[in-house]
Image (cartoon, rainbow, N blue to C red; front, side, top):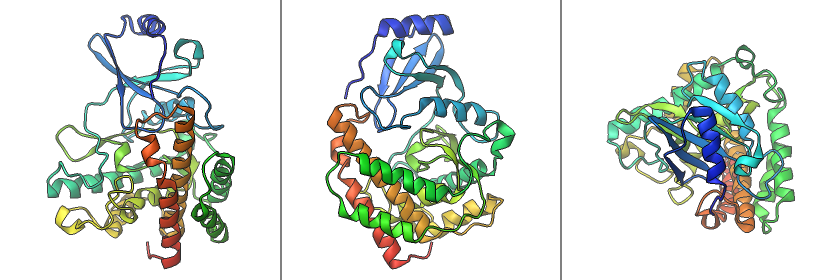
Length: 338
């Protein structure tokens, strides 16, 4: 899908706010959320993220929320790109957008990390776990995010929200997804009062890694961030151990020991060593993450039908909605000890 907008208007906007027009505008591929571009302004290398054109689900692609959480976290030890400017005026690019500094590093969309050495994979996965724990350790009130979401009953509210998105979609009938929703409703955990800033899509492909070292230097794509329960993010990260390389880059079925990739249990332990809360990841949390990702795939399919999907492979990955729902049911059925 091609994002068309007035480069003349963008040029004027950039000149007004950064002193010079963009020397180059390059669309970044690979993502399925908000269209993202590299722009160069003199010696500055920046990133621009905007909402996609066309109809979108209510509350989706909220670039204003992305900008707000980045701005708040940029003052903490959580690694994020530094946000520079938000623009709500849709007349410039057709949708709201924001500009942030460009981090120089690597993004690995294949969680098997084939380009890294064995010991580098081990170290990077530990960094991934510890970075998530550092995020969850931040007190939302202390950085002005006390109203970034509704505290309490997170899983109940999220289950209702994403179920509604599934009900309102134009996707084909997916029995496994309906069954998974019903199973999750029956297994909703009691609210334990834990509240943290949650990323909502925490996985290897949304992390910027140092150019030469196996460590996280930035968490990317904050579109789904809110106040919620830390086990939602941990369950989302743990999905990789339950999905295969064909399932959007999972690692299930691979020789993890040979690759130097930690087991799910070792990854969780690395997180717990930093976390300030006594948490226990359960099959519900992993199945819940699989459910959310299934509905995300449904949304991608809907956007592909309307011609406003951000990624070029939207049509190809849309069928993964049924696959992730089936894996979620399997996790609950086997009661896998997380």
